[in-house]
Image (tube, rainbow, N blue to C red; front, side, top):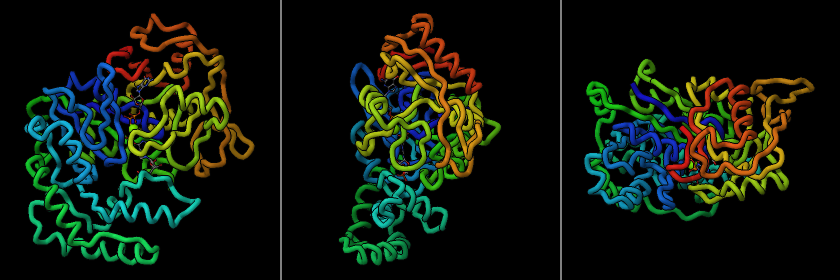
Amino acid sequence: MADLVVGLQWGDEGKGKVVDLLAKHYDIVVRYQGGHNAGHTIVVDGKKIALHLLPSGVLYPHCQNVIGNGVVIEPHSLMREIEQFGADSLKGRLFISDRAHVILPLHARLDVLREKLKGKEAIGTTGKGIGPSYADKVSRIGVRMGELKDFSQLKNKMQFAYKELQILAQAMGEEIESLDEVVGSLYEVSQTLLPFVCDSVHFLWEAQNQKKKILLEGAQGSMLDLDHGTYPFVTSSTTISAGACSGTGINVREIGEVIGIAKAYCTRVGNGPFPSEEFGDVGTLIQNKGGEFGTTTGRSRRCGWFDAVALRYACKLNGCTQIALMKLDVLDGFEEIKVCTHYEYRGEKIDYIPYDYQEVKPIYQSFKGWSQTYGVRSRDALPQEAKDYIEALEHLVGVRISIISTSPDREDAIL
Ligand code: GDP
Ligand code: IMO
Ligand code: MG
């Protein structure tokens, strides 16, 4: 069996902290989709570590870490992360799927150029080349990590995709590096990465035979899912639990607990609908108290109240068996806390996500605030108002809240 951690909102829910918290009880942590658009933060004894591609089990020496076939890998970015920990210390602890697709420099260039062309209609991507890389995978012209073992075919293969970039860049007056330069730098970096590249599916099946405990780590969030999110303002992978099966080779019958991660409020970075967004002082206060600035791009995150309609939707999509409620402490000191329980849509009160999601308006229920939860480590020690808030969320969403997080630090959580 494999348990799963998945974001229920628009990403940055605190998946890194939860995976780190749980990883001590697991043998293997596996990333199954996304790429270095992800930024997962772990704080241990006040020291902050931001992970983009490495699974959040890397801080435990006993933990093996797998980058699954569903991930898209920018080799230079991965190399930098590996070097941060020291390649030697990751030997025997890091396994990179030979089926994972490579993000080439041309993908990042295309990502940025397309966004520029869209102008006001831009998605607000991270500019990391995620979309173009997955598009090449789907078009069956992508390069896989396993292909870095043999460079003789690579330049030929990349020529076609590179041409498109050349035409676009030229038209937009942008300089791009030559294909030879790209292939050369790819060759250099592949020397560090290749020792970690393996058949990850086989590795995971063997681990299952040996009854090893596996934790699957999602990136992004359910509302950014390619099919079920707020398209086109989404990422280009299946972020929901279903993506874990295709992204690792672990079959659906072998998924155990599905732990959905949600903040006690909502944030979104990039463009697209966000019904419970707060534009005034409340939004700014949440942003500052929650340190809501992107781990990957440094952009400020849009902030608003907890959206129970979106959460119910995400829990159903993922089959959540429990929820980890994060950043409760950020709401400390608010006199009034609101929760979106329904939407108003074309004059009606609804409790689902309609196709024309940008048209919905939030309908709120108000809760009395509390003074302090920061650093609290037992449910009994929470102020009564905070207990009431959590119980109301459980009731509104219909899933048990089994973890409550009260600070960025690894130790500050109620289990
Ligand atoms: P992820 O992408 O889902 O892993 O989340 P990020 O790391 O991008 O963003 C979550 C941010 O909130 C990080 O800076 C965490 O250190 C921080 N964080 C996580 N849990 C808590 C919490 O309970 N309280 C506070 N104040 N910060 C938290
Ligand atoms: P973690 O794993 C928050 C958002 C981008 C943009 C949209 C598409 O840290 O939660 P992309 O570059 O993926 O094509 O951008 O998705 N986005 C994230 N937002 N957290 C993330 O990852 C994100 N990864 C992508 O801001 O709106
Ligand atoms: Mg993040």
